[in-house]
Length: 566
Picture (tube, rainbow, N blue to C red):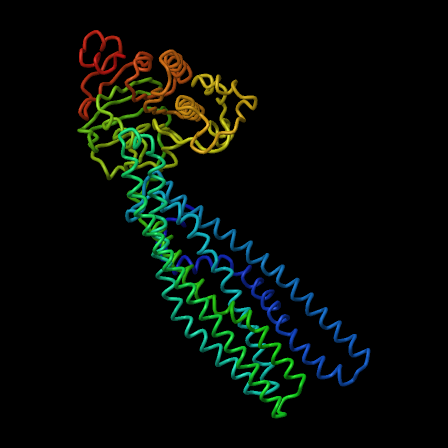
């Protein structure tokens, strides 16, 4: 799966891949839907034959055979449609799922891809709407072929009555498709532009929701809303344009189909009046003129859906074919858990250098919040090795030589704003259900009061982003998840900023106890956590300026005392 997502995939290649992977389902669906269209088209033919023969013979036997034939046709229509659509929709849904997973895998990679300025909200739209519309090609092709079957059966049946009727259907169908093919190109380009604008609006509102509290804090919510309104209005205008184009397309298709049906009916009536076809053939021709409206309508809509699928596939290709910022190495870190940062320059970091031995509990006291954020980005591999100078070594191996999966298994970097997901307390703490230290993590993070507060305990339902939890409860839940992972190296960034001083003291002691023998780095200005650490590194202006225990630094460094004392 990972290799598949790294291949360049232009839109056409994505569509070919979708068709190739579902060739079996498409063949079965095409046969069944072709049978459905043939049986439905056979209905007016059967009516014509009944009028032609049964009414002439006026025998009960002929009437019984006719009724039986109609029953067989109706049963074939019902069953072939039911099972044909079941096969196609299952394949469609499965293929959409595959593309959603691949796009999501690219969007969630720790080593970011160069996605041409796309935001997470836009990638979300691509992973949902565009993936679904791309997978629609699996239904479009069989329905296109089955509609063609209906047109061919009708043309052959009408040709047997009179060659002019058959030619009229064939020429009319070719003319309709030629006109609609030109219109469908406009739909494809308009739809692609609409999808891009809707995705931008979605990304904007996602950013606003995430930053709502700080926006309220400095009064920027009205300006932010105005910005979103402009983006959303732009998307609305484009949606109206697409609706107009679609409306013109649908109206033209319906009008052309009606003209063709009317032409067939009038021509058949004229031929019957001239005595060149029988009454039974006239009934068949008029019936086919009515029944052919549905396959013609379906046939004429297919080019539009093909263009929409291609536009969506092109947008997916923006993500799937984007090259990674760096290609992770194949190595794995050696056991032990030591961490070394050697001369790293990134953002505000100016050659920061320190080493954390295996099993050591080290606190880093950053004087500038931005410096802490830049360090976390490097350790979390959110900033790939080519994006910064210097070297980070984990277990003696450089990060550039390690696979991202190996880094994640060996070292967990828990950000201060870690997401809380909809589900339960348990699934947030232990998403995989495999943690062996779940209860210890709950106790160490002081989340026990939250668990005890609710009758369901760890199975208490948590809303999206932890909307039904307080800020302190969300932070402790995030900390419990990090501790439950029980990785060799754990990096925590401001894990206790939203809890009271007493709880913070208990959490600091609990972390030191639970993580004893495991490498732990806490980036914080909390006196409780700084005091619990084996040693403290002072990070000031992008470099390590001091190193000692918390209490020694308090006694001998006035600047440190002012920075961390509460």
